Image (tube, rainbow, N blue to C red; front, top):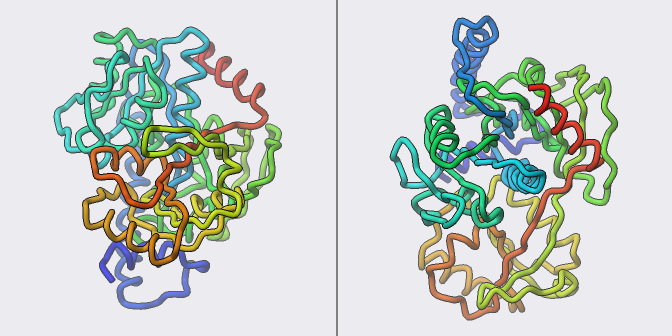
Length: 374
């Protein structure tokens, strides 16, 4: 077991102090140093010793307080579509994690064409560009620089920061924070002992809108705005007065990798499925397939942003055949990295999933009001 796998197992522990191995204790020490650095940096911004840069347009950040999948990318896509439909000219700014494009500004999409592959631009930026045609997508470590390029070269009048909650150098008008409903704080530890990026009590003071995602799959109503009390796995209790909404990952189509044929989701019911995913929380994908009636005969979980090669595909195909699977199913994020590779012998599809926020009208109205007042 490598270091990444050992860390992942620690993060998934149901109790924050069950593992007292030397490895866990070492990570705990590193977490203390990480906490000091994060708290000091945020204090400097809060006291304006570090100043955020204001750009001449509205800025919306979509982020979370933990490392891992809470649905940031579907949320960015939802916002981009909403703003475009309302007549705005949004652009999406991303770090481009995992992409090999290391220029200060990488144009994944100029709004007219997708200019980079997932290998160059990163799988999530390319997925966003493909999902929302006509919207520029840029990557780079300096969001201020990529933001200026989006404004000056592409005419953007609103910037959406993908995974931007901790990027405090760029001022934002709206901070949208996504929390996993089942484990909002992971195991209660900060990186690297746990998935927390910063202490949650202080972090959520900066949030303008909180969206709870995952869990409670059949629930469709949102929480009303008002004072909320959240108790996490760490035992921390947070008193909130920001609007809290419900984010629902909504499967919308099953699409064949061979020709892009769309199939009804009911096609999965009773089918023997071999599924694989390289996303933040692969188990969520498995639960989604099961909720659609699929019989999961094999499930292969890969690290987030995993780059598949021919040996991976050969193993997936062999596993599916040995399990007598009738179909292989993966995520849309994984599918964009498979496009240039050879087709598998077993019929292969990807599940397209969109984000829905409830109550929808209240959320949309709040976003528009915050943009006007920003």
